[in-house]
Image 1: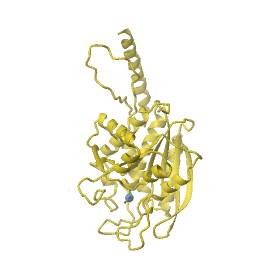
Image 2: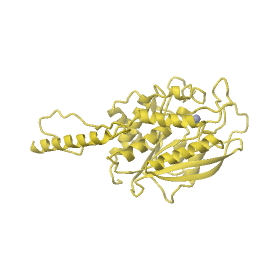
Image 3: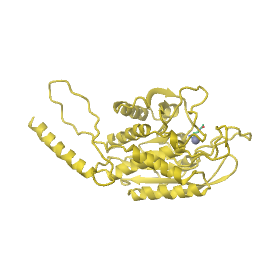
Image 4: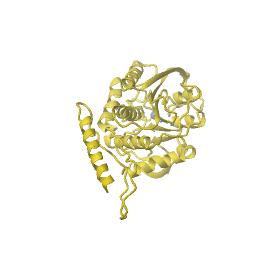
Length: 350
Ligand code: AHN
Ligand code: ZN
């Protein structure tokens, strides 16, 4: 009992200190966020470390998406694409992450040479046990599923912008919070993911024409012998009312990570977003990370359960993929879940 009182006093001080620290100007409020189970038995619970996870700030994630959209359409070989790469590198560096640029030429389905850049950032680079987080940062060069202006590029607020926005916010929270995860973390922003064949393409079909940046990285890692304990890919994680199903390739290659992430989301009360059902396989960056780099990686990607013939919701690859689609509740559910998963991870490989 005495111990519990001491613990309570300690916690009170801790929370007070934490509150004081997080009330500095321009610092989003950070509260303790715990995953606890209620104890109904009469015996006192065995004290165990309380998992304290910082709060994911959805306003900040939203701002990071808006910043990308304002720069312009992040289509390879364009000025906005180049500008956005600088924005991403500078943001990560200013947050204290160690940034590596990987420049490469990728050849698109139509023979266009795409001057591409994978942007890689490391936190606690000396740690052996590492979690890999990824998203693609390029946007689609055309609106091939739209009815008008099919040849014009899309904003890609969700397809491209949202995964990057959530990961930049995770990068900010981790570096600015007093609480650090026990593991090392790598973030990769893959380029040239979304330059695949348009819907009406009449030429010869070639496989593997999507996800050019992740294919390149999987074959040419930025560090020799690089590996990670596991990876989480985010793709289209910001739309209002989005549903994330347990995707086929993720279940095939990394079933325990799928379980871990969906269980965490459930404990946090995000079952409406992280639906406990399965969806078909989708070719996305995680395919090559699993099959070539041999790192088990899951994909948190929006699934549209209403149409049988399409994995995607109807804004996909249209001009409706703009800021109006983005909802902070979705960003919060994804960002808080991933943060919890990172902070739950112990220091040692098992
Ligand atoms: C397929 O259409 C098979 N894969 C595309 C994956 C993707 C596109 N993710 C975002 N945009
Ligand atoms: Zn796309």
